[in-house]
Length: 154
Image 1: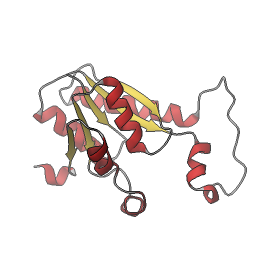
Image 2 (image 1 turned 90 degrees about the vertical axis):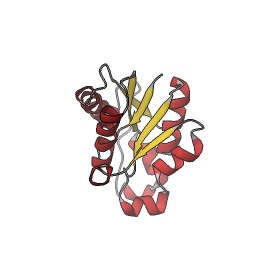
Image 3 (image 1 turned 120 degrees about the vertical axis):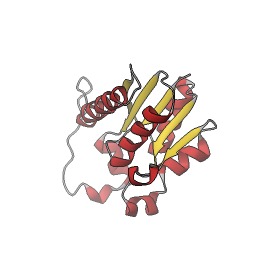
Image 4 (image 1 turned 180 degrees about the vertical axis):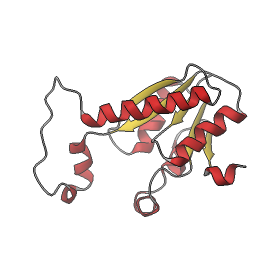
């Protein structure tokens, strides 16, 4: 049995880790942080660049990937401290919507449970793009736990 916890560093993602560690029995855990190269992000919002965008060399690591690795490591450390020893950090490259990458990784791992916070996006982005947690819930085809903000988990 493997848990997949989606972690973006937000307070809601932290609450999801804390809730999982406090209320579920310890199981192998993967803490997934989804990242996309800036150039891919600009495909969604090309006017946001406002200037030239550097081209990535094939032998170099993307800065976005390095940041995602740091965030995933932080999440794995939080998971271990919350009672999920041996949590493994994964920086997963997104090739589309974040929810799709989470669902794909869960399928690849054959995760028994996906855990997500209720909000990782700002409220405005959530209205425009839809809720990641809602999309994961409806597309995962496996048990999904959506943890509300810490002030509502009790």
